[in-house]
Image (cartoon, rainbow, N blue to C red):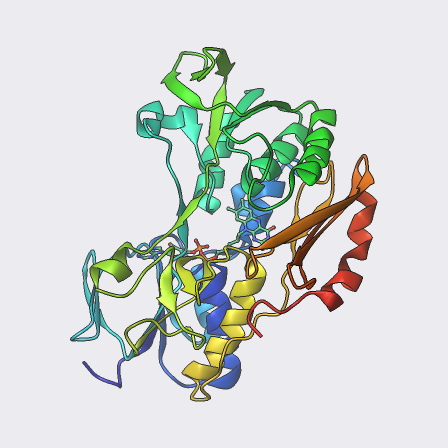
Length: 384
Ligand SMILES: Cc1cc2nc3c(=O)[nH]c(=O)nc-3n(C[C@H](O)[C@H](O)[C@H](O)COP(=O)(O)OP(=O)(O)OC[C@H]3O[C@@H](n4cnc5c(N)ncnc54)[C@H](O)[C@@H]3O)c2cc1C
C-alpha cells in the first residue's frame, strides 16, 4: 500500500479512455496506468451497430491502438490482462499474472451482454455484439449468409435490425414484449419505429419468447412459445446488458444494478471510484455515452484534487434506426407520470409529464425529431 503507486483505471472503453484524457488536461504528471482484458484499441462502441450497412471491417472501426493511446496519454496501458480480484486492504489489484498496487482505483469495466439460457450450446450460430472483438466474430460468422434472426427488440436489437437489413440481410426479430424498446418509449412511438423497420423488410415476432433452440447444419433453429419454428443462418442475441459488478461485489463494495457511487463517483471504499456502464450513480444506471462523458469530466477534477459533484443535465439518446429516426430522453428520474402522444404515421411526438406538470422525458420520431433542442430547454435536469 503506497500513495506513490499509480492511479489505476480498469477498462479502456469510452469511460476509461475519456477519463484518462480529461485527467491529463488537469494533471500531466501523476503516474497513470490503464488495464484491459482486450487489446486496448480505442473505438467508438456506438459505431458497431452502424458498421454492417457501411461494410466496415472491425479493423476499420478501431481508431487507435493501445500503444498510440499510451503515448498520447503519457500513461501505461496494459492489454490482455484480466483482473480477477481487488485487495482493498493492501490497495492492490490481482490479475492473471500477478498483482499491481494502486493509490486510487477507477472501475470503468463496462457491462456484458446477458445470455439466453442454453446460448453457450449454440456455439458460433448465436452471438452477441458488445465490443469490437464480438463485432469481428459476428462479421466472420456472417460471411456468405443472408438470414439473420435477432433475439431481443431493445435499443440495440432494433439498431442491428436496421443496420443488417440495410446491408441486404433478411432479418427476423423475436421478442417477448408486445412492442420495441419497452420501458424506453411508449407503444405508439414503438409502432412508428417498427413500421420503419418493416419497410426495410424486417419481420417481427413480438409477444413471443424462445422456447427451445438448436444449432443446425444451415445455422440455427428456434422454437417459439406458440410452437412455431424459425430457421436462420445466424442468430444475434440482444436481450440486454448487465453491469460488470463481480469484482466490486467480491471485494465487498456496495453494488445494485451497478457499482454504487455517490455524486463524486466514489464507491463505498473512498479510494475506489466507478463510471460508465459498470456504475450506478445515485440509483441511475445509464448505459449511454453522454452520461459517461459528463462523469469523466467531473471525476477527472476530483482525481486532480478539486473535489467535484457530478451534475447531469438532460441527455437525450439518438437511436440509430435511420428507417425511422428516433430521439428519446427517457424519464429516468421521474418514473411517475404520463405520456401524451400527438402526430401520426412516422412523425410522432410523445411528451412525458410528471403529476406536477413538469416535462420529464420525450420521444420523437421522423420529422418531429427537429423539436429536440426546444424540448431540451424545458426538460428537468437528471441530477441538478
Ligand atoms: C451496439 C451498441 C450500440 C450503442 N449505441 C449507443 C449510442 O448510439 N449512443 C449511446 O449513448 N450509447 C450507445 N451504446 C452504449 C455505449 O456504447 C456504452 O454506454 C459505452 O460504450 C460503455 O463504455 P464503458 O467504457 O463503460 O464500457 P466498455 O466499453 O464495456 O469497456 C469496458 C472495459 O473494461 C475492460 N474490462 C472489463 N472487465 C475487466 C477485467 N476483469 N479485467 C480487465 N479488464 C476488464 C474491458 O476489456 C474494456 O476495456 C451502444 C452500445 C452498443 C453495444
